[in-house]
Image (tube, rainbow over all chains, first blue to last red; front, side, top):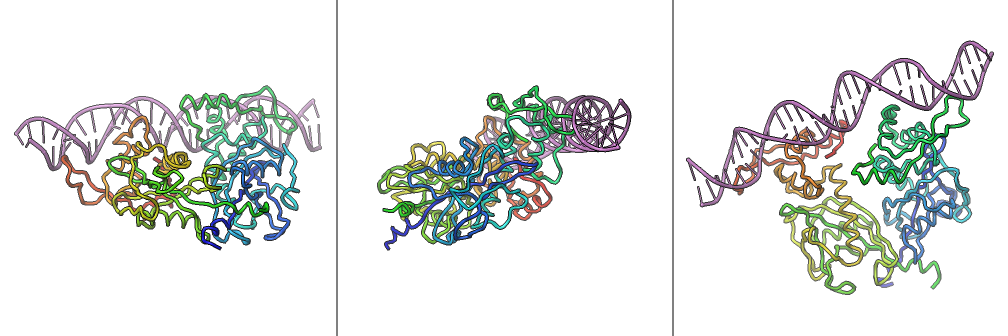
Length: 231
Length: 231
DNA sequence: CTTATATGGTGTAAATTTTACAATAAGTAC
DNA sequence: GTACTTATTGTAAAATTTACACCATATAAG
């Protein structure tokens, strides 16, 4: 094999850390591998990139095949290419993370693996390949990004309470101390892109909270006036 | 050709945005292409990744072959993989940026291209391939990173004046208003990891400034005490 | 229906950080 | 020695961040 040919003995893939928020906790969607290598192990959903497919498109495809969702938030994070990261050959993988609303979709593992399900982030361990490292990178990115862009809303239903929103931030940021309730509400409301609905929370055994929603147009105005999201 | 084979009809490369700081301005090191495609055009230095080479190693190699420098700051930024980004085939490229001290090295274009030289960032335009887009991403990353980590020092000689340091920040950040001199000095000195030397600036036609240097050990202490670099 | 329980919702004062701003000091050039 | 250029330093006002506690309103239990 000529030297130039050997450059083409490689493939590239995308892997997707799909974050969801459920039961007050950050979750990720994993597949269980149905074949070697790492048969039976949990792994990030991913696939080889098709020859005529852009990277972002491949990441969207993986997500859509698994969840049926389109148009969700997706961000490229980092590329992993250690020589021996894949037992069967040289495969470099581009890691993405996406944010989905848990429950707004059915999971279809068939196209990928023997099974797939949500895992509490706190219970994830020992993934296939270098996927623990990939997860760490994506989580770190999420923690940063969630403070500088209004991404939290991608993980919540269209209408949510301020406590749910704060719980989300507390969970994602995982700070030694929880955010202060009054200060959090003051700050997020002062930005002016959350709109109060006239609906209330239902089915709770206590005073129901008001439901709010994120107004994208108002957020654009907020940006155009020179403000920045910073939590 | 079988479908699986077609996955291997691709290659990957690294491209490196090498930043330097000279004459009060941010500069980048470009090569001039000696062969098609884009013959004669200026481009980012880069190369295919060897079959047994890690991505970071490839980026270090490109930098070392061009400048002779090792151990400089290098950071992966983003991967570009549009189907048609390379006229000769499917090549995805992992973009890195590095920070070097201009003048501490000789440039050796031979291994890459017909020539190579530093360009003022403000005068760079119309690069080969999608390299303008890559440059934009790296510059954006640098702008963010320089405020949250003590990277500026990588672009300066070991001993520098506070005015040089501020000039660097003004240049990199390119804000509508320059930083305030007194506030800048107060803030950076209060972090406690710049050490004043007993030397003075030489060869200037005005009061010479004190020279300072960055103390990496003191910076580690600063971090361990829970502070964060934030400028 | 009364009480227990749980979360929702709200304001203010102190501490800290950020901002704005100008006069003197110390060199070289002529 | 005079002109010129950049170096160096402090303070007051404004803005932001932090800390903190009580009453409201719903369901659940008795």
